Image (cartoon, rainbow, N blue to C red):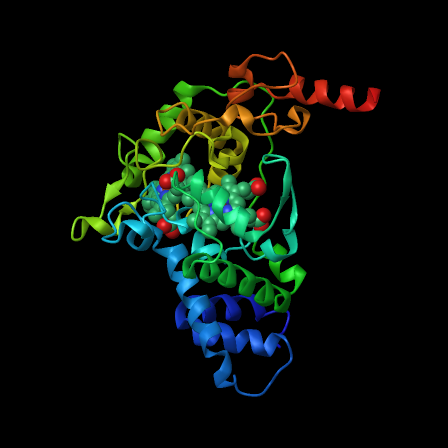
Length: 319
Ligand code: HEC
Ligand code: HEC
């Protein structure tokens, strides 16, 4: 079992750099089986490795340019890893290392109990603007197996080690976001990669591989029902992860940037008003109504959030 200190780096490096065999080997170790991986588990290894590739190269393998129309599940040209960095192995914001512990659970958005497969399809239909992957397809089995394998690896990583690698948290500024400031910061800090028009940079050598730098809005981006379309979720991600490799923004910058990006055009998902059957459970920064309050939609999209928070706190206390 990896020790507390070197554990995470070793495990994550092994997972990313050396591929599936090492993943499975590490898993076997973390479960305390020190014997060599038996050959009967080889199909599992292949499945997990396929799942990891689907999450890294979702555009190339399941996107709109794939030759087999049956495999075109991803309606955007994003990869799962465009948001779940390092195929979900990065600690903190949008990590997939803890997912096994999170599911099954009740989803306020759909109003029913959901498992990992359901959650993958929520991202497929919203974050990827695509269509649901059948539960019994090799693709779903592989993605879910890979995500579950991360849970095993995560247990081998000590909690303190995990914390040490988490990015800074986000605290909501007590004001409405300023779209003009967001636009200016976008041009200064983001456009070098994501393009002045926010539409990203397509891979020039082989167009079907999708994007080198993913689009932040436009037809190939996430749709308006996605979690990233919530301003506080996006601000948290941006502060923790962007600019890629050198995140250095403060809460105010991340907040204005998130609002500016979410004010831009993107694919629209039908029937969004049916989300959150219990409207009181709707996140206060949800980008679409109806809500169980009378604050204007614009305030839910861009703040200020303190009055909305106070309203729901009071409502809860009164019960
Ligand atoms: C545009 C960004 C984006 C893309 C692309 C994306 N996701 Fe997500 N994903 C999110 C957000 C945001 C959440 C919700 C996090 C939260 O609840 O705070 C999420 C949550 C999840 C979760 C639940 C994590 C947990 O531990 O609760 C899973 C599993 C997941 N995504 C899998 C996928 C898969 C598989 C794909 C590709 C098919 C994908 N995602 C594509 C943004 C994205
Ligand atoms: C050095 C290049 C670079 C810079 C600068 C950069 N990004 Fe990114 N960004 C990326 C890459 C690459 C990804 C996808 C992650 C991956 O594939 O590993 C990404 C992903 C994203 C995503 C999620 C995926 C999507 O397309 O919606 C958002 C949102 C985002 N960046 C916002 C920003 C913002 C805001 C800034 C400016 C503060 C910024 N980025 C600056 C390279 C960059």
